[in-house]
Length: 128
Image (cartoon, rainbow, N blue to C red; front, side, top):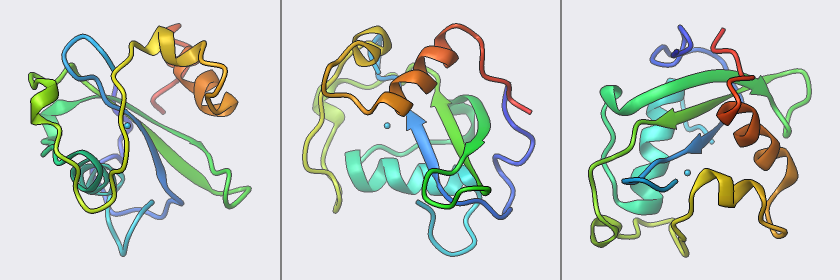
């Protein structure tokens, strides 16, 4: 399911993303929609262009930066690209391909992000 405001220009604090590339698994500027912010970030960091149909799921989550405000969590469908297609934009510095299951068990991961991905995998996140 995709949250009804994913493609609208609404007030929100930021976005977190889960990008699926093949069979493995990534702020806001101006008055962007959550999707526009996500699309820009993925382009800036990985050089990958996303389209609306690439989104599989989205939902609101509590903002960490501004308590009481909301952010968005977006998940892509598996993208039909190869590792060779990943070219750093102006913000990317490092990347690593891993499955979501590998991500949620990494000792160096950010716990709240790992918990969010784990909830997504177990269908405990709601799109509304």
